[in-house]
Image 1: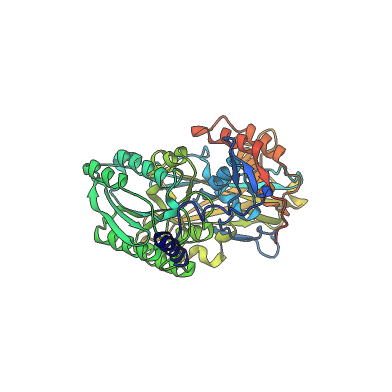
Image 2 (image 1 turned 135 degrees about the vertical axis):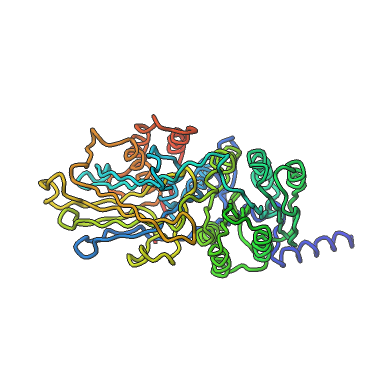
Length: 505
């Protein structure tokens, strides 16, 4: 009996200390039947109660006569789309705060032209019809990062920072992460280097910086990973950056890759403090990639903010396929070919009455920041495409304007290296280049379908006539270019999605 009471007291102390017991904090076991959903495999599972998403409002229309210039940082994340996919496949409801439309767009690869000459980036643009508001127009901006063959990729200095707290003890969290890391090791160059730091109730350097030529040693360390204890994230991040600096490769890919299912609840827990920490190291040429796992404990808000500030990306890993996509098929995206990448669009107010940037709400910048090379912006990986959409309300003058007249000018700036001066690129969009429903490209048709889907999920006040049926129709017309079948997969998700009916703030 004493042993039983001792165990109970120990467990209570464990919880009060802010630690996670295996399988407890993932779901709220007091849910009523209405809080449960049917997963793809037929199991009844509760809606996750601990996931944290930040509320935000859609970008509004801006009168071009009052402000004809719009500036934003690119966003190369894909997490928001993968979170949606996990929720749909498990029968969960999609809430508006979970949806960042730019991440839906940039999860996919578009059929954009490669850079030419000495540039590591190419830009393109298209003006065409707006499906949900026929009297409006859509401006699509496209960006493509230069492809880098594996034998030309810079040497990598990776530190895997791995959450091994108790809540990571499941097949879709730590075990999934382990299998992905092993696949990554098999695809790296032999002179790349890997360190492993783990954190739970304590922080441990599990593997000193080791060349991939010693792959078996690295894999042995990965296979040893086991989950238990609290989450001591802040101290672990500091150790990871110290390890990167100790093995820094000049002109190399020096990157911390964080894998976690949720929050840091011991150590540096304040998001602003974490942002300040990673910003300091980003300015020294160290990148941060954040990978989230599982549901019920996901601090989406914190993960997105620290990855944005850490010159990196935020991905959500919901399956073996996604692990392969991020760590194997798209591994070249860990190599930044464009740093501090910014977009600026200037509209002719005689042709454009108003405009609205779709998505990128937390990436909007002051117009003055565009030419300020000290202002941080987003990174583009090798071979990666970035897409943005503006919805335009045209003036009557546009109907009779000369074909050579500029509707908008798309300016873009990027750095090949973080310490370089930014390089400008410009693309003019003229009246004569405007497409119709018959001539619109598949790139714009697909982007329109993704945006319509995102606006329906967000219950956007600007969605006009957008519906799930419209989104499915647009995506269905855009499948001739579909690397890895992700576009076709989106169609299947649209058939099963459950849209929230909650009122937006």
